[in-house]
Length: 117
Image (cartoon, rainbow, N blue to C red; front, side, top):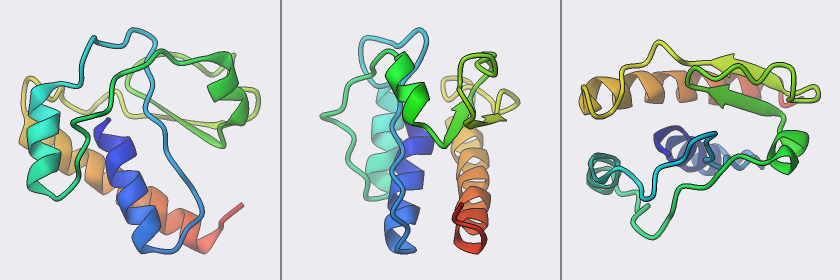
């Protein structure tokens, strides 16, 4: 949820016609309250969003797939897979997780601005 929220905010600010969607192979019942609070403090409201299961349709439409440890390389049908499994869990260290995720998203946004293909 953090990565998608940051990505959508930064893509919009940079005039990029990309949209991120958050989904998981084992989604929780609700967005982690730490994430809701953290993003709210940054002016991003995800309080009405609900975690959802990743579908094959999601993967088929994706240009990029960001994974936090799941190996999806065999089912992504050409999408670029970025593995961010080294990021600490939000429940362990929300500030560190948010900072690292934002840095990765900023780098991805920068690469899309340079080469939008």
